[in-house]
Length: 613
Image 1 (cartoon, one colour):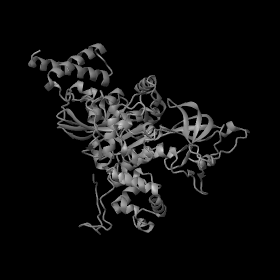
Image 2: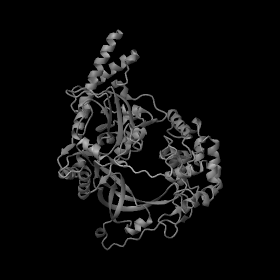
Image 3: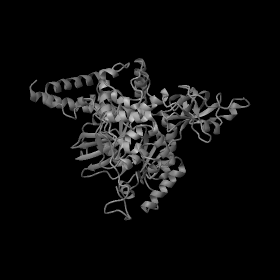
């Protein structure tokens, strides 16, 4: 085919495939067979392979996933993606309505738009000239992760906006929405994993979030994620929508899938009726929802109301009650956490809660078990807190009747290594006294590699366990001694996966002192205290040499934290581990923050009125 004819044919194919995608994924109204669709996609792909200049970024062929990324660069939101305050009952909804009226200076009813709160991952999409240019996760609201290649694989996200009758494509628009996984796709994926001998994923929400953060877009595409649009950050167009319900119609006209159950209501009473109806109907949907988002419908009034901290004053999330069920408590087993804490967990007679089979649940600690009088053999009430984590609330005493069930006691020896258990009087937690306990080591490695610490993509529960069990990692510093031959000795470890892990390990060396301190698992030193200590001491050597008195000078560092830090650095194995990290090239420094205020605003009090972004 001549180049000119190939370009024309490619254009025709793209238009037909885009239309087919829109009708299938957005309108649920397929017009062509799967075979015809596949044939058109195959023909377009062949043309783009023959004429590389035809492979445009918005081509349907680009959805299958590009080259795997070595990591995600930051995605800076043009306007912050705000979180939402929560309401849990009718009284709190009425209080929200009263606040809106008071702040707006209104006496009559306020109109709202109600939208189902889909349990997925919030993302933002940037379109310039009608074409998808970038996309990112919410992150902290200001900066997320740039996951454009992965978002392109979601077929309900248009690569190019549609021009509908009376609706012009905006010059620029940031579209916000929820990436999620349908229950049916979740079950299909788990069935495929079971057939391959792989463990099942826990729930659709975590599976969707993990899919968005895959380094290889092809793996994201395999999860068949979906997307609903519900908001706009920035928009550059002649006639923007004036209300939230008009905005949803506008997004639908541009080619986005918008939740069909969203409703505009004239007052807070309409909101209350909507919420009650959907709490009873939630299980009929093919996706998980955990509540309803209520927004002031008038966009001008939204702007007037502004936000308080990270919460908009014009919106609130009504959270449904945690799902619950009754079942029998068969046993209580103890796991050992990364700091040696003994965690009692309930073994339950399997029960369905919200479409998920629950056979294990958390019991927190011995005090929780005793204060709630929970005993092995009881019929207990179990809830899924936040619709995710199962938790035993307490026994159904009328079911116990006159049965004599023994009170539960924690083991006196670690169930993993057999060492003595230390349970000081008055403390809720008991701890294994063996710092080399294998259970602690696996958890320490997993925590060290977690996103909030050194963020080493690829080293999760399974690989952390394999590294410890194989003897390749005996403390976290040995992660940096791993190489390709060592990793390839592990079961189910391919060269490509091993290379990705090594690249992530190398990248983690630049995380800095605060993230490293957080990852070391020093008792009482979480991310916030780690940041304080890193900023006040600047280097690992200075922190290791500090006395308790010197540590107490840091704002927010109390006696318990100071004693714990000094005790950590007093241990020779810990000092040797730090030396190995330093030798491996891990950054053990942080910028020093000034102890006293400096600059032209030092000592001044600022009084602000109005709103600030």
